[in-house]
Image (cartoon, rainbow, N blue to C red; front, top):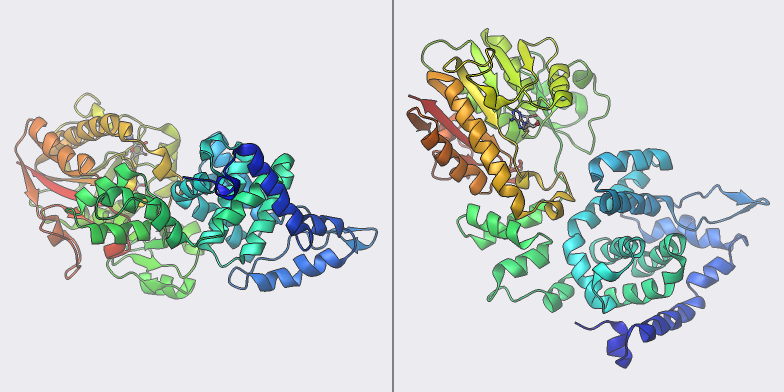
Length: 528
Ligand SMILES: C[S@@+](CC[C@H](N)C(=O)[O-])C[C@H]1O[C@@H](n2cnc3c(N)ncnc32)[C@H](O)[C@@H]1O
């Protein structure tokens, strides 16, 4: 790979900086530095005020701090607030291992960003985090040096700039100049470098960069798809395996993963009517779950139904697997239900609303105390007993006797590869080395769940990961080790009639690209 100055003059880093300065100077005539010169003249606002909004009609970004005035004259701040907010969130994720979905709301609040500004900052943050694998490959090529060797503040600013250039309708000159402004604020010595690198990035569109950098699909399909759709190779391989080697479907899944996840509500049975709730929120009833409501836009806000515990936010796939356990035919008593991995309480919420209708009671087990408290909050008023304990104590904890429960849910901790849409940074944090300890825990919890079930009782094993080691391998191993005879129930029959794409059974794998849900796995076992 060659960087800009290598191609321009065949020399090393110093020449690159020269070139960057030259580019900056060329830009001076109508660009970055000239804008600085014009600070305080009042003309800057013309360029970065209403006109700027016109540059990005799709985003509706509005200039930050337009009201900042010195001596009566408007002064443009160095960086517009949505982009700076996105930078802050990105930096926190990379520097402090923060979670974007937790850090970004605080950053937006501190910056006083709402509405379209907040939406633009969110798109930049989430989009950049998802795309970071591909962006880094492009930046490495464009800079002529490994992106890991670029100072973190400059690196994050460049990632934001490259994302705008390649994946948004922000005009190239605005993407470059705003990123140079950002670099001037966070790493003032690197503006020339940033300018040069971004101009190199802007020389191709996203497809042309993939063509230049990705291995050929024919010779290395996993490597190609990983770079083209910004996923780690081991995750692409795992998805392809779970999809039976179908690379077309794998591609559709990867594309879906790069879109924001829709927000679904669960109208708790007996407490809220999904059609009425859909009307109230301007959404639509779900396609599959009888309790689901699709929200039309972003966040649910302060809905009375949520505040009053009549509904909760929950992916439709999560609703389907919890309802499948509750609806599975069962002979004999049916009053004791167990949720062995309950925190923060989404599935317990639905199960316990159903239990209330049927005169059953749910024991909800969660090892993390703060998450056990969340379960208690989420199920207030419903027939639930929360135990803050380790689910593997079945048989030794008197509150968790063996052969006691009629229906058992084991929604095990997992890699979460099925919900990458919701956690934009997680695909880069997860490692194959996470699998052995997780799968051991999954197996032990499922064995405990099988022991907790009475003979004839039902156990649903659920993961939000389609990785076959966490799904089929775990279920097969746990069934072998639990010391009791176990039969598979065909889980397809427990999902809504006519639901497409459920495979050959007896287990079910849901998919974002097939069903619009998270990639939930469901196996239902009957204890002999
Ligand atoms: C996938 S989450 C469950 C999500 C939950 N069912 C819901 O729908 O909201 C797995 C949960 O298992 C908990 N957990 C992990 N190890 C556990 C153990 N040994 N015993 C009980 N809970 C455990 C985790 O703290 C986490 O809250």
